[in-house]
Length: 87
Image 1 (cartoon, one colour):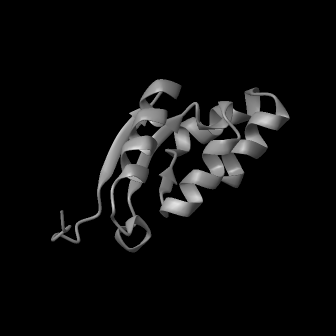
Image 2: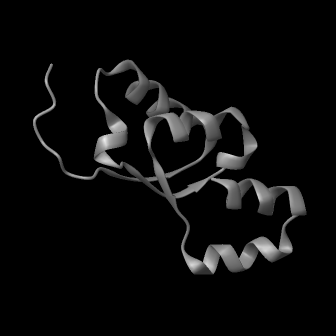
């Protein structure tokens, strides 16, 4: 299958199972995802599995957290804040 379109895909995603499934599907496809700059909106629970960070980088996925969520990170443990910031 040849990917014809160059649209940026946006995944409104949260939860470990959904993230894992989407990453596995994307990795199984012969698509240069990094050139398409796919986006995960929210991406809640990305910090639960450290291996996600490397997979996200490899696929060129941009993680977008709304400012209201980032404000809540001040109430979270420091390791969670650092994990979210590094993505």
